[in-house]
Length: 170
Image (cartoon, rainbow, N blue to C red; front, side, top):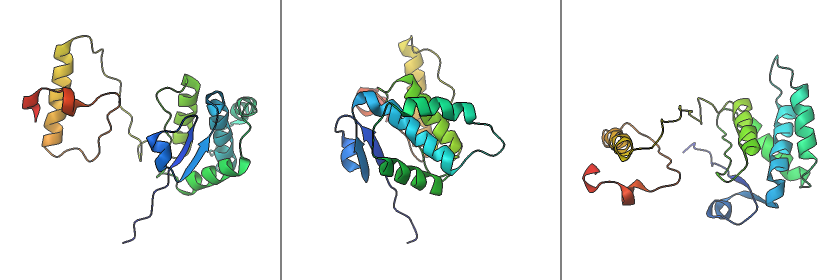
């Protein structure tokens, strides 16, 4: 009864299913996404500067990148205010096609917003998937923890094991 509604902000260049479900969608050219991420990071740092950390060099670099994006400042401010207001509950995700710099800014935003360890759980990358035996063992292990009820939420990127896994994995 006291649950708050989640909000979804999306910055994208093409319409996606995620964007179609967004509460607040900002359509920008693909070349502008990095600048928008930088503007958002600057606004979050302005609203909630990290205690005891000198971020002047970072803000200078972000400002140079942010200058490349001409977007609605009100949208950026509204999004940043909402994220800062929900520190420890917000998470920032960069699409898999976004450049490395966008992913770095998203990670920095997650750190600034207290998402790491709260709404975002980081894991060490798995070893190489060279052999099909390694893939089978990893998938079998995943099936076991799922069937044991030890997973609350699971996000899978780039595949669908329901269609590609061995049938006896259940």
